[in-house]
Length: 126
Image (cartoon, rainbow, N blue to C red):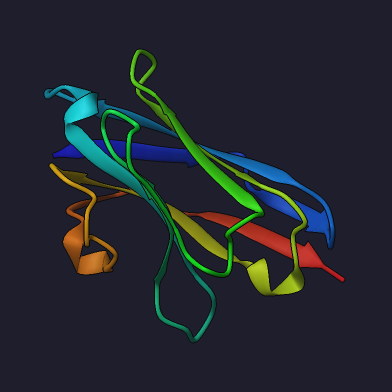
């Protein structure tokens, strides 16, 4: 199990940028975990935004964020980040940091991840 704490959310106007961060703590090596960002808007399902493998060789982006978002991790600081640019009102949601032991490949569902942060709100106004 890994404990996750998100930071960096807030309100921004359309076209702006935000950087979300997640700090992880675990008794196991952070680089053993696949890390991901999900988001959930009111009344909608929780969707994956992006994921990154422990060694950073694999990344996955949902179609709605391709070209606008960059996921990264620092295995010495046990952190995960999501840089989002050209934000749109439809990006408004609660964003969650998530972790799973092992591979990121084919792991795109919330049920694939065993550890979650508390979530952080991102609001994009038009």
